[in-house]
Amino acid sequence: MDWENGSDLSGCDDPAEVEDAFERGERFVGIALIGVSLSVPDAGRVGPLVLRALHSGSKETRLQGLTALSHMVRLTGEVDRPTLEVLRALLRSPDQEIKEHADSVAADVWIFTPHSRLPIWLRARATIRALRWWLEQCWWTITGQYK
Image 1 (cartoon, helix red, strand yellow):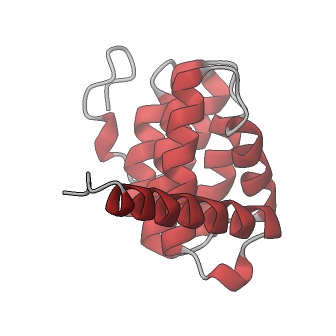
Image 2: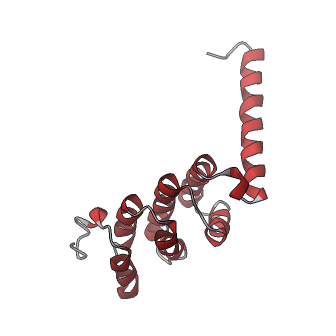
């Protein structure tokens, strides 16, 4: 793995290597984390690394952490409460790019995680989004502009 220019890091499949990269302050640790999230079907090993990325001072690493979270949830169907609370905070981020990416990840969490394991705020969010979609469909149908 080339930590200098980031090549081949997406093929990383060792959580310990990503942990060491965090300790060294590697610039491309988020890329390696995405690789781990795609190849390690254990949320207990990947989740703490994702949480660490979401707390990063680097915007790029936070965005990559969100991507890794999405992959982890798709692969395992699991996410812990501390990670959900950070996701909730990122949904309110003043940075539009982070906010939009967090919104997409929240949708993946809703789709791939059993709803009984999710907090009430995420259930309410999904209900509001579904209601908004339904109302928009009704509006377009009523106005005759539905295609």
